[in-house]
Length: 502
Image (tube, rainbow, N blue to C red; front, side, top):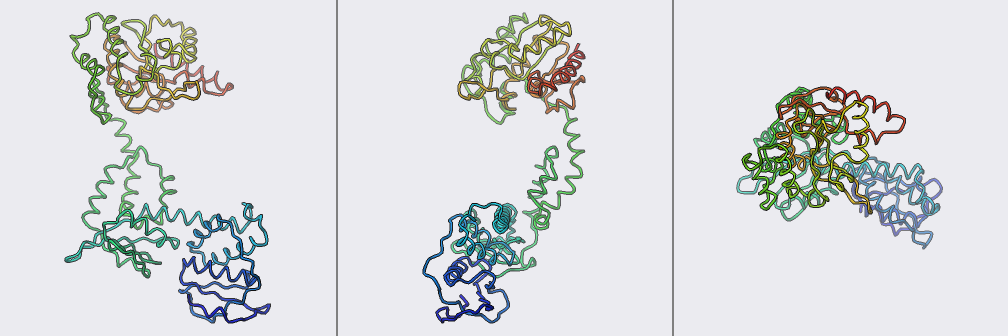
């Protein structure tokens, strides 16, 4: 520590200033030691000047002798806060921390005052430091520098806003323990040779190596995994502020990819969908292989139409029995029973919902719970009869989450819907409807083979890979979740969608 002998007694007069020089910008131990001595000597915050070894040399006034033997008491939470604040770039951080320390001795309630100006400032600085630590872990990019007869040195250039290099370097040691690397920043540099971590002075951008072929490969990969449908520029800028972009190779592609996102999304929507013909294809789409066992034997039986009766009603009954044994996804293991479709065969219109609910699972029939009663009310107002329609669900078992003794509906995932698509496809083959009505997003996705925005595409006829037109609208349960004052108007609008179906 570059400080004169503090054992020399020197009484400060009312106008004297005590100058303390720390070993560096992040000399936490030095700050603690000198702050303790200052508190024991009763030196107020406004009479202390804090400088670091990087500051210009000047006259140093030694520490005054202690005037009390009572050790200062500091909350543990303040220590944790100060360890972050001291990494901030603000040169006034030492003054702020010592002022808080001094006030805590006189004002114990300060520790629980979240609205105090000094406390607020310290917490804001700590948050900024923690965010910078996180960003450095995420945005450091190494480039290899090949050396004759030695392992390559991977060098990264980064421009942190705060003094975080020494704090975050152990993270990279743990993550890249077998790699020789160096992180260069304008403030500080860190070097790891596989066994020892060494810190040095700051560096310049020119000392980092240029881009190489590996970086070009990374840019090609980044371009191909970019999903235009998930682009949210505002969220991206919040998580990856522009000041980091100049040091990220992929940042050069952001403008181009963002500009073409709308066109690419349109092409994705217009691309015809492909639907699996049977269960084993659904498993491959979901990224898994079919399990061996009775349920898959049943699925294989379905692949050959000769194994099903020629009569459509009998074929549907046999398919019902097969679906009862299906365990290709976990839903069937916990449901009470399969809920198969019912109604006219052949049918003028097939009505497809998402999945059975609690009452449907217990009774084994589709749309018999609250949503079913609302659907029956709509059918009655339109003059329809269930006997003239075929009513079913895209997913045949009830997926739920237990909360106490209640079973709460849980939306089936895409994999589960794809696996269950084998049963819906066979239903369409044997019901032979002229058209289908999709109630909700899951049913629409199953019938159209793509993601569907129900509110944007409702009420119009859409072509489907099943070879029948599909009209999309809300699921009746969506109306039941609305506020009472909004429900009637939404119901009338929904009724108009249903009217178009026939």
